[in-house]
Length: 338
Ligand code: SF4
Image 1 (cartoon, helix red, strand yellow):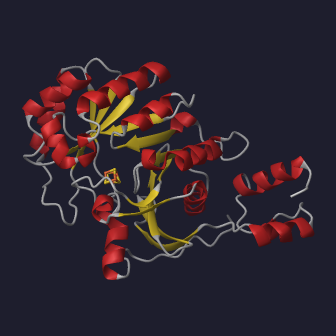
Image 2 (cartoon, helix red, strand yellow):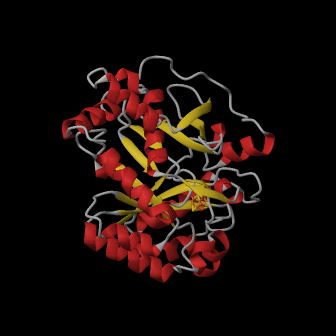
Image 3 (tube, rainbow, N blue to C red):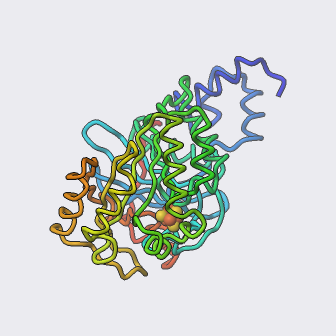
């Protein structure tokens, strides 16, 4: 735009350090420059429609994009972290059996700005910058690779939000080319792989992506990623009663990952509209975890913090779309300055 380079640094500072919500706030920029920027760029790519959940617990934001589509993000605070789970697509084309996002079908991929916009919106609801970002909301990150990577580089930038790569997790359903591409990026981001079954026949039914990238190919890509990045890979395994939670399958899982630097998150299924699977008993969950732990695999049972507020991936948007309005309790945004 013909302005000196230091103006870019000033704008960047206003955006990501001061978290300015309009161009008028950027008082150290000439008024004419602010008007130029305002005419050319919109600062807020999304508006809050609803927030469910209560402080200090997990909260979920349903947000509207400029084209009227809806996405979700989830705030998961704990004693030492402010985690934010962001979406990378509106809906998802991967159609995993137990996922509300997959059931809603695919609409479009998000732009990098719409992903970073979720981080800015989450920061305003938290009242401060999140400490951890997880790409585990709606959509498959590797189906929107370039925008996801661009958003990571923006939120990772040390003179901006400065969220460390090791505090950023990409969760994939197992898209092998994406895993390979990420391992060559020179980024220390955490990789999380939704596995959910250790045998192809079963995984084919739960996760159609497996028909394209079967387990053997996926494991090879995970090994390459671990070797290239020296990172431990997290495998997500949703336990579904009587489907994938037997000790035999736990042993099959052990055989699959025992030679890899890996940990396993076991997540008892949260009920999903349109999926008949049930939550297993605590006894079945601990028996499955016991097999893994006995084999020396670090396995942790994670309780879904979001099921009561429709925070399982895509549920809030799905209910909103089905009814024309959210079932979430409406709460105003924190009106304080961002
Ligand atoms: S689990 Fe992830 S990849 Fe599978 S349908 Fe849901 S959003 Fe898509």
